[in-house]
Image 1: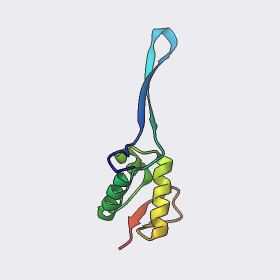
Image 2: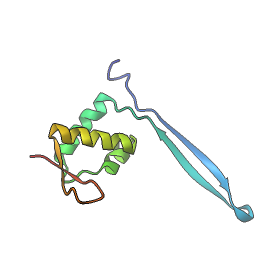
Image 3: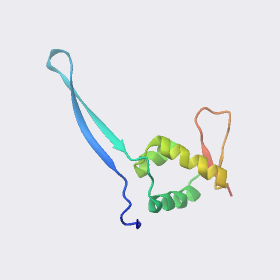
Length: 99
């Protein structure tokens, strides 16, 4: 499979929820693929080196991937030595580039 064939699968849907007294609420549902194409992964690697701090939710939003996939990717980068955990005692995992 070439890099052009690899695309992120994103499905978006809007649900209308009925509430009391004729009111309704719209909810947007976004279903993302758990697979990260190699081209996107290269772009993430390059952008990580330029950032001061890295959080999994920022990467997930920017590149439109699942949060769990972004967490696994950051754990992989930590094992490779590309990034390191800023403070292990924090509940939110904040990474910094390893220079």
